[in-house]
Amino acid sequence: MDTNKSFHLLQDADLKGKIVLVRVDHNVVKKGIIYDPYRIDATIGTLYYINAKGGKIILMSHVGRPKNKKTGEIKISSDTSVQPIVDYLKNKLHINFKIPEFQEFENKGYIGIETSVNHLIKELKEDKIDGIYLPNTRWFSGEESKTEDADRFAYQLAGLADIFVNDAFGSWQAHASTVKVTKYLPSFVGFLMQKEIENLDRIYNPERPFVAVVAGSKFDTKIDSLFALLKTADYLVLGGVIYNAYLSAKYGIEIKGIEEEDLQHAKDFVEFAKDHPGKLIELQYIVESDTLEGKFEGKHRTINIKELKPGQKLNYVLDVKKESFKEESVLNVFHGAKTVFVNAVMGLTPFFNEGTIALDELIDENPDAVKLYGGGDTMQELKRLLPGLYIVALDNPKYYIFTGGGAVLKAIQEGNTLGLAPVKALCD
Image 1 (cartoon, rainbow, N blue to C red):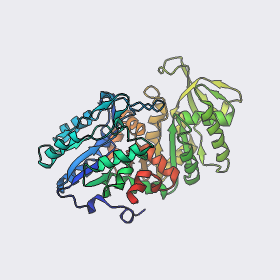
Image 2: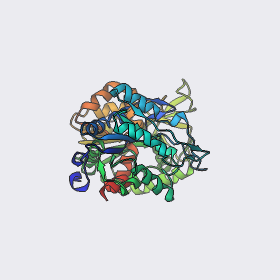
Image 3: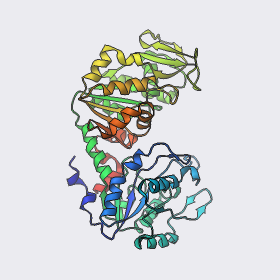
Image 4: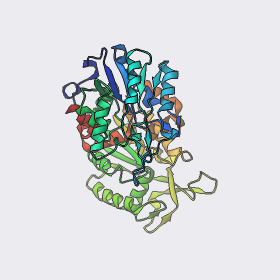
């Protein structure tokens, strides 16, 4: 996709003296702590450019899931505050962002943007502060609303600024701050978003052979992207609970912890895979554990899937043995690949790490392949388990780490970046 023909790019915007509302995906805070600032750092180029061109910045991001999906109640707490992000930006860049405070309504979060923000905008225009960072967008009742509240919130957001910039590739849901605000402001694509879209093209039009590795805890959240990958990739490798569900469906066994809904999805996938013979690479050795609490001596064992028998019952399967990645057929697939896409943690964190380490080391053995890593847990586990490789990957042109693994899978499922609602909104 030629982004120059589809979008208004940030570098084409007149920013001098303008207030610029920037949607970022700084969702890296868990219970008040930043464990990996990669997604913050990835947006710094956009923020620096806006500032250098004379723009005044208002940032906004979601953090966590403060809304109870069943009751609709919104909980405002320090666990999902943007304050740690503001502190990080201050320490890293020596810039001072202020967070406006609004009135909280019981169980409803913030109803909307209040006029109290005006004094901060005045300070921003007078250079008394370097920027404004709005509270967690999901603290506002309109952010995820399906009613006119979403339009009202988007209109209030637009009223703060002259220009809207979306640099939040990972925030692919159609929310007020990612989609509806584009109706009310001239809208532009930030540098990170541009880079993510460009790298998606390496998945849509890969140099072949193309190998995809996908793992996860729920089959239903990835089923559509798995169907798409089985059609478009040359080889597909599964891991995590979705691999367990697949094994249960194919070999007629029972694995503890597999839900009936996931098993049904897996059965559909097994049938679909019959139309694509030779594409699905099965990892031969898995790790069965009697407990989820840790990797304890005598409580786990290796299972060879070729010895599985219909009706056999296994306890929790929590990892893939490293020997699986030493099988000649698996080695040939990864060593011969020209493009590898990884959205996978193979084992239950933080105890079962063997499969993830073996996978990432095997991928790195191929110096010629383009290696595209999905964000989230995939990135964090690479950093935790193989910090040296993670540091190399950040600067190696053969590697690219997306900031949003879920967004990549959604884009793969849709077959086009315009299938992501925020991207399409920028186009419209």
